Image (cartoon, rainbow, N blue to C red; front, side, top):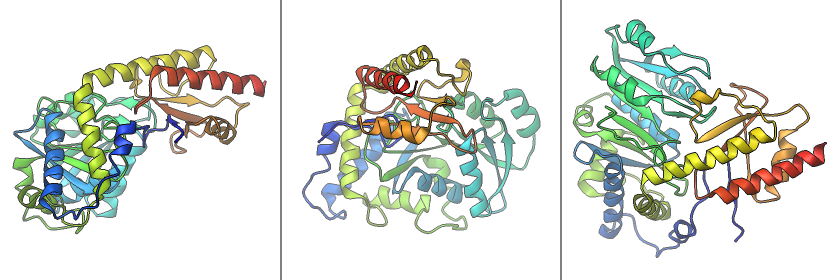
Length: 363
């Protein structure tokens, strides 16, 4: 099997051992043996987030958007209002979910290259008395911007707001202490920082708050966060048939993450990003974001006028490298490169060399 270097922002390149873990004996997901796997996964999620005594990892068979839908539809009471910080495509996704389910919201809208201003947040939004919760994206995968969730969530807690964080492409890469950061609900997925296989999403949920929502009006059936939590807690079972093999792979990926440690992976991620950044700069590429707000997880690169993205993509794909287009609502002429997953500095150097060859052919 040819090894692929995925520089797209998920699914990521996985280890061979994670791939191998998909091949298991067939098992009914109602068996105790499988229930113990599920329960262990929930425990590992809270262990690496330093919140084992206060939070529970609620799992769903879905993409990450499914878990986002679960927390937004389950946690906000009917008639209550949520504040959404919006500075990118995935901030807009939070808005779209609220619109779909008629959840009341207001937005703190920023440009894609702007970080939230804490003074504006405190003086213009948090002083209002009609907000129940605040939601934001940690790493904006559309641009490579990293929002300061600790400062924002701690500020929100001063006003007793419930805090919801989309950590889809940062969890498992950036060290996150959920209790220190005052995060009530953190949403992510298997196929990015954890380096697992697509198909499972999760909400690391504040248990005390979760227990208060059981009598709320249900906006959803499949994605009921409280009902899924109770089924996992009491029966060690999903309410509905889960992606069995993907959960075995997730369990293996979590074991490898715990063995590596998030801090070591974060250090490696930044090392790979710096190699990529300076290599691109040497080839005279320009970037969407200023250096001071780059996440060092993903970089949005301006596409030179002489390049066609589809042609560049196909050239790289033939060489077992996958690159990713930009988001049209942000900027038409960019492409994106991420550095998470089971890739090493040599893979980045290989890509840069192939990119240099492509440029030479174009000129």
